Length: 243
Ligand SMILES: [Zn+2]
Ligand SMILES: [Zn+2]
Image (cartoon, rainbow, N blue to C red; front, side, top):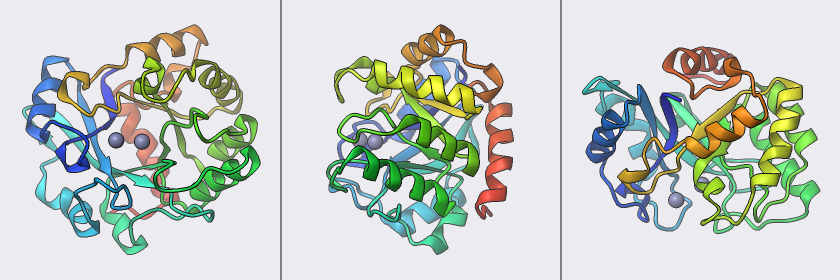
């Protein structure tokens, strides 16, 4: 696993390392690259606004010290139509967009309704990956979610931090169910550490083990390497405008 597709910096407000420190950690871990995905403006402690997110690709080089920097953010899904917390006219400037449900930004409802919210978010075309669809706080209908992920060519995230069980409770069984239906439907899987401190950058081992356990097809894992990530993003370009 050469790419960590979910990481945070001090800009998230409740994360504690700089981008420079994360780059250094990625280099030491032998990664090809990682995605910078700080929380979107609707997260109470987030320190970035829409203009900040839009300018990332202009300001931050694509490669630093041989490490590819994928300049994105972790959007909050903020309403039941699946809207994210970035004006749509800004989204073409963002290289990679994770869309996540956080209890602090949207009130969880029934399994059926949570599932509708996620599917609506995929249908908007603005979200490349659904962040931590682990069912914690937001029970989800995995057959429906994976079918929609295939239809809209959106990746589902296997979140290594969730798998540690410390932050969001024990979600392994939910992920096993997600992977079962994702494999059946041929869905792309993204893997991220969800690091909020540099020591966690590139920590993808639990996810890697789980993917091996279920025999997930390598070619559908977009964190495998840059080549597979770029191929996935070429598909995403059909779904959303990216400059
Ligand atoms: Zn966070
Ligand atoms: Zn999150």
